[in-house]
Image 1 (cartoon, rainbow, N blue to C red):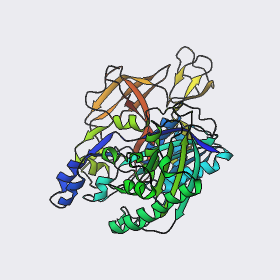
Image 2 (image 1 turned 180 degrees about the vertical axis):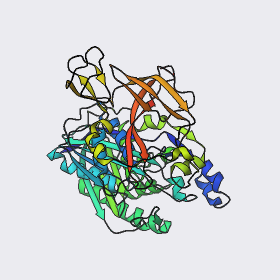
Image 3 (image 1 turned 30 degrees about the horizontal axis):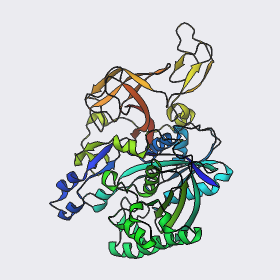
Image 4 (image 1 turned 60 degrees about the horizontal axis):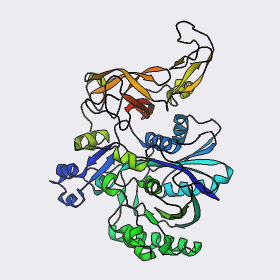
Length: 485
């Protein structure tokens, strides 16, 4: 029997205020006012599906070894690459062995629940790290712009009950097209809402829930949490009533504070629910899209013994209100600002160099001299120890998880960045090692010499001609720290 061995999530820091969206668009679409409450999560300009999946995975892996992971899955309908394994980038960023299998799953909003189901079914062949990450695009002034959100979740699935064992699963598949997005198109096209609700949510999803309860022999009244990753007021409550599940068992859909993160949302909600689950709790998870996948987990006595780094609750608490709708439009690529001459520099990828240096660039692996113990970044053939420049003595030394402090920094309004001013500087890693790097997710006045920082995997640049995305690690103020550390 497979079970959840650990779990984690990630929600971007920026929270677009829905009232700001409505204020900018009410001249054209006054009806959006009914959705203009609360906030939705919003990726920074240097975040995407891959970077969010990396953070969710790090959140999940904070309390456990990575050495036994045999397979890495990434589910998304909005991944940055259509033909380059996004899960392969995830594997490199996590500095996992080259001997793991990497799998991308997508093409449906139930891809996240489907990936979790397949991970449970294949866990007997090796431990699986399954992630789901989503950053769906929506037309400006559309309802989806207000309802969508960005986020990711991650689970380690392995043999044994773990924190929560899979009790049963049930699937319904049908080519029910509530929305679609053809190849090469940027936005979804949806269908009539009442038909989607009555034929899709009520019948297909409802039948899947009823089918699982009948198959497993579990009474509906025993369900502790009903986790429905479908945006829309009253949908989860309607499904609970139809199945006979208590109204108080309906899980918070997090719509008011982050919106709906598409394929990732059921898994984000599951990770959020596991934070407070008690032994014996039954958690029913529904993923919907061209049918439905339903998974039933039971929390074990081990629940609470393994904790994520911050968890969904911690990342949600880290949020910063973003009232600037124009900034959102710019970050999402809906408008093209005049970037000036400083933005005109060559960002073409050099793929041979990326492959040779992938551990350094994607995994942030430095070097440690086996003679002197000197730590440096990047790793080179000659040690930087000025008293013993030993040759060929360095071993790999991963730095991504090592805390750091600001040694010096600059707040620069002249160099180009999509989110000025540009913060960068020298950081010292705890235990040794120093590097010059960019800072991100920084508020004015937040950074000072000595401030604690954490490394995060982010977009370095995007090549406008080829569309290639280059990634690297940036320093971010440690959660809960002030500028004086």
